[in-house]
Amino acid sequence: MSTTSVSPQALAINGGSPVRASLLPYGRQSVDEADIQAVVEVLRSDWLTTGPKVGEFEEAFAARVGATHAVSFSSGTAALHAAAFAAGLKAGDEAITTPMTFAATANCVLYQSAIPVFADISGDTLNLDPEQIAKSISPKTRAILPVDYAGHPADLTPIMEIAQGHGLIVIEDACHALGAEYGGRRVGSIADMTVFSFHPVKHITTGEGGMVATNNAQFAETLRRFRNHGISSDARQRQSAGQWHYEMVLLGFNYRLPDIVCALGIQQLKRLDANLRRRREIAEQYTAAFREVPGVVLPAVRPGAIPAWHLYPIRLDLEKLTADRAQVFRALRAENIGVSVHYIPVHLHPYYRDRFGFRAGDFPVAEDAYARLISLPMFHGMSDQDVSDVVEAVKKVVGSYGK
Ligand SMILES: Cc1ncc(COP(=O)(O)O)c(C=O)c1O
Image 1 (cartoon, rainbow, N blue to C red):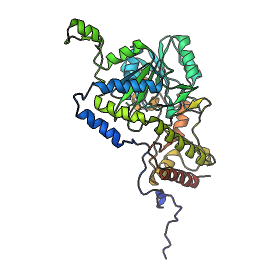
Image 2 (cartoon, protein in one colour; image 1 turned 45 degrees about the horizontal axis):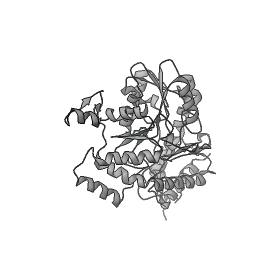
Image 3 (tube, helix red, strand yellow; image 1 turned 60 degrees about the horizontal axis):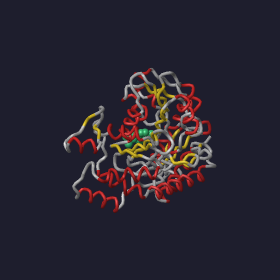
Image 4 (cartoon, rainbow, N blue to C red; image 1 turned 60 degrees about the vertical axis):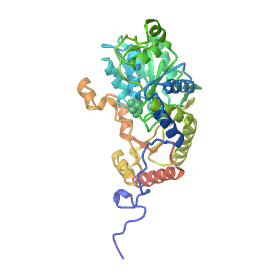
């Protein structure tokens, strides 16, 4: 008899058997036959890039998020850049945002040669703390860019009040929050401009793609021009001057989202409600399973908020554990659970440190959260077995590192 056999409860990282045979990713798209047919139909049509599907997708999207206008872009990042432009950000201006986000939120401010000013976050939702925003306002502040972290809407009532009091524009980065609601209102209908992403890990996908929703016709027109080289697309003007005539009126980019993938977006949007339902179901299952697990802190949900659950980020109560986040992360990966971390605070990236002199300790709430965060797999295509594998692995790993 072998004396070196490993107990079935041993962690996979220590030579035990993993909970799953193959890796479960943290996020993943769902594409069905109707999606494929819709794309093939466009491929057989006359229009591959800007054709009828662009307007159709934009109209359906605007209606879904409760906005008057929706303007599509080639990515969420391009959409953020366009919103920063439409807000009038320019050299010397400041825009307040959160360090707990993907770098693109702050980068769009830099694209306009303006300065991103970080404000620390609230300890429960990890969204921008309105008190910290208020403290960060200077005579140069022009905009606030809250992020709906993990799909939980930012604290929009106080943020809109602060903005109105100081004449600031609010660009809400809702790349995590398509379908979320705040105080009975839909995300997309509240801020001056709201930005969405259709990256494959999001609630609906076009491969790459993004959208800005707004109720402001002037912003919508600027956004449309900016994504098309700055060309004015006034049809009447073209008619009166001849069909060949167009005018470039501002310096824009080619940020267009092609018909091929707008057709995909139209189909995907039809399943948004089902996708949201499934994500909320998974969140409820996780919450029920981890509520009593020492060492695990659950994501907060504030009264009046209905999150869209792009991510399910747990925080480790490190004081109750013998391992740090890196060790727990590696152990979960060894169990074939594709965990991730959202986010390394933006101010700690070398580019931001070198350019602006940020240091560890500048935003203590965000930094403390970062040391504890682990994003568990969360996507609408997860099966019940996938969910129970995650639950089993988290209990196994966190349990084995309990004090
Ligand atoms: C908060 C946030 N903002 C912006 C983006 C950029 O979106 P995209 O990848 O579509 O350019 C992302 C993408 O993941 C994001 O999570």
